[in-house]
Length: 363
Image (cartoon, rainbow, N blue to C red; front, side):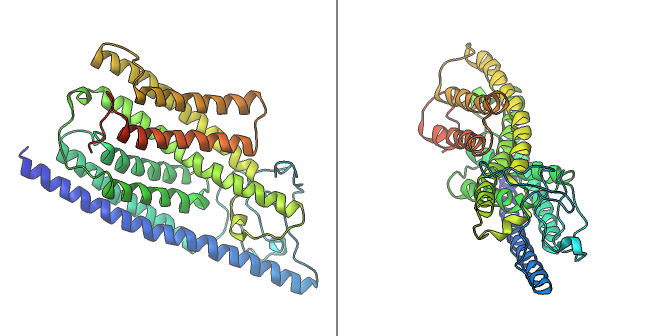
């Protein structure tokens, strides 16, 4: 393929990436608007109910469904009874129908949240444009677009959004929209501003079918870790909010009423982390096999190899501590966050500032 065509495809790719970033930005605003508008609606319903009853608005603890009794565990903000249900307004049982959100399994309820539906539609559109950017980059390069940090970031952002949209088919995780789409915007901006690299050929060590196997699993696992990072951060906020409410304090984070309780966030994060950990295990194994074929050894204590193993150890410790040592609640959330920070460190600092056999940043 002539170089001029490659260059043109690269320019189309950059245009698609810019359009995707713009679409994601509008979707981000719509997700944020949904949280703000829904929170305001819930407050108005509670206020109206209080005026009708002549009493203070009743605060229903997060996770309490209509007709279900729930008690807040003051130690960790956990909720007994059916877990996972976003908080409902105190007057929902009276037939207002406002604020009905996902049920105990984070399935979709009967609500009509227009901003959330618009946000999801815009995210789907952004993902389609983003996919066009990734594909044109691949066509321009004549290979899979995973040869440098610019390509890792743009492809990784697409996979993170795609995984989020796929999970949305079965679970109502629209409350994560602002975080996932926001992270995708940050990744695209960072790729364009700090890590932009023109279309080019791969270094000899990367010219192998193992690139497709090894990197694709790594990108997918990282996308899942991105989701669990957002959930763990929300878990910490929700746990603090639940303990504040249980102690009789004022609820200053009204938008969190649309987010499932801390226990449900932790349980779902744990399950997704378990899947991502299996993927990262294969990433480590296939990387070792590829290293043997490329350099004649399975392990060489290269900085990239070491940090890939460190990430594996952190998430293995997280899964082990939660499953067998009773590390639940905020401790589990912090371990999950530390694991993701290691992923970010491995991708940014190690790739950019540590020389080694894996120095493929393209900078």
